[in-house]
Amino acid sequence: MNSLISLEKVNYQIADQHILHDVDWQIPAGAHITLTGPSGGGKSTLLRIIAAMISKTSGTLIFDGQPIESYDPIMYRRQVSYCFQQPTLFGETVADNLAFPYQIRKQVMDTQRVVTALNNVGLSERTLHQPIIELSGGERQRVALIRNILFLPKVLLLDEVTAGLDENNKQIVHAWLRQLNEQDHVTTIMITHDATEIAAADQLAKVVAGRLEVHA
Amino acid sequence: MNLAVNNTSLFLAAMLVLVALGISLWQKLGLDRDIVIGVVRAVVQLFIVGYLLKYIFRVNNLWLTLAMMGFIIFNAAWNAKKRGPGIDHALAISLLAIFVSTGVTLGVLVLSGAIKFVPSQMIPISGMIASNSMVAIGLAYRSLNSQFHDQRQGVLERLALGAGLLDASIAIVREAIRTGMSPTIDSAKTVGLVSLPGMMSGLIFAGVDPVRAIKYQIMVTFMLLSATSLGSIIACYLAYRNFYNEQKQLE
Image 1 (cartoon, each protein chain N blue to C red):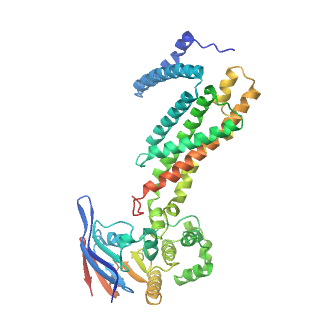
Image 2: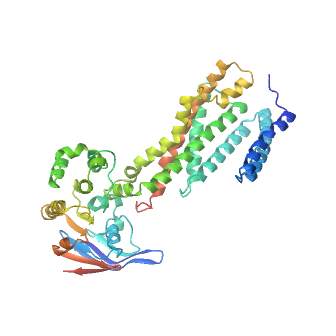
Image 3: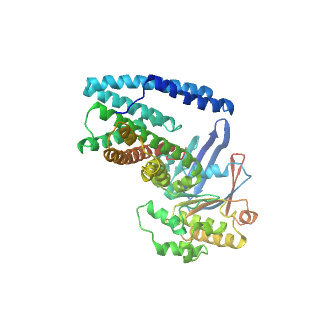
């Protein structure tokens, strides 16, 4: 199978601190990868490089047959979408957040689609007009996740997004991510430290001290 | 006219400096050196400006007047730049912002007949406009710097969602423009109630009828609103990109 994303000898360095060493990684389209490894090992850095949020120091990164440098970073990030570990919500209400992906594309919010997305992660339509300060940590995280998929990206990069959720909410998010992967063919890479998530992984990769180990 | 200040009275008024100096020494504020330097600079600079303006007003030459206005604008830009550490091209941005805000405002005043194109009117008014624009831009720069620092996570998330640089920064840019304009708006609200500002005070001092003097102050209020809003918007829209690199990442 052709790789959707391909990394060759990717390095990342800040001053003389070597954070990623010669990372080679072939990520096929439609993969559902669990990425793990000790804290400070370079997992988030690796995902942020793939998300074009930071730039590798050296090596090549090919996305959909073209080097990452050939894309406009803004259009690229709409296809390779990164979700933060502890997301910040904008504005005052949930609607302000879910309208944002439409605003930046100069479109009017598709309320039907937004409500369906809310329902998919166990939130009701009522949430839409709720002030963000009233949301629990788990609700915030789910609202933030929806922001990333209102326009389906090709790749979804998730940085410990289930870390703040209770078991019940974790199950909801897992089922939803699986559905995005299987039905909508979104390639997903999810960073986690959660033993259950690691045990349930289809494909497991590990970043240890800046080096990638891929387990088939 | 009742303008009685002369060298002797000025010398006696210098006693007031001793009050500040005394407080500094008594309370061990360590400001004595700065007070002395400040006073000496103020006296020297003002004497030079006084004689220079006297000369320029007498010569009444178009190019000399424009050169003096250019000098004021450049100095204002230089000072605004110092309030935006870390913003590349802050001098060029400030220069453009102050030049346009001063130029447009002066242009309207001259064309409307509110002031005449003579050095004794153009130079002081340019100074008032440029200095207010300078303060507004300085505040706006400081606001941009602190907001891009404090709201870093929010900006990163907007970028990650595929926002363009303006979409990712617009809330910050708007707040910075607001910060630049707000002192002018606040002082417009209290003018006459709290302070009798410089323009009308000066005219009243010189014996002008207060009803005539306030008309000048009204004009000043209008022109400062225009100058600070134009200065802030130009500076902010040109400066926000500086916080990103060529790969459209937050620096």
